[in-house]
Length: 322
Image (cartoon, rainbow, N blue to C red; front, side):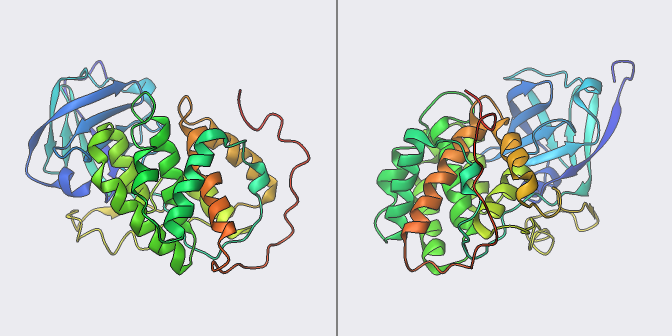
């Protein structure tokens, strides 16, 4: 891109942010800039647009290029401003153009099957806090204390407590049972009230997780852990809601992100890929998933399907990082 005065970069935009990208042009502050991505402030604290190179982690709040980071130079630093609107993100020497609609990965609700949990790493203290929160919400008690004990706790753009909280939200969204749906609503409401306590990026991802959206490997793994072997991750309902979200009706729609069915033969590799997300984000999120699953399994009123043949691995050595 360095040898071009101005480049038009076609990209696929998530329906979660398509309304702002298609809307009236506005100046947006650059929250963070990395070789693989930019994070832009869309105004409200929990509204963030991720501009993603093809090799970036595929966040559900993004506009995603087909071009890898080795061929992209954003040309902006944190604190600078870019213009977002009319289907474009205007960078100093390139316009990112929303040419297609991306179906972000989403968990698929299903009855709980206790199979595959043995592949998860030790959840630790975060897992205990996630369990207590999920157990309280499933029992109809207030979710506020549990949420307040996690949100914003830790360092970085996505603090550890928020990552674990995303795991709780995604797990409850993936369990197809009335107690889980009521618990999800309660946790989501409690989270909404304290979003200003954490970073803008983390707040945006918490809102997305409350609706079941996540990085493709995360959505696939949570769906698989809840519903057992042979489950898939289809982004149910993404396309019909796009016009209501303010997205242009003439955009092409990309197929759902992610691979097809996940069985036990590749579950370990899937866990490894999730653990590789960020410095500790993947591990912290799985702590939340583990704690929430434990709370779901302790609730007798949650219906279960018969698990398939799902032997626990003899050893988890090498599946998680120290």
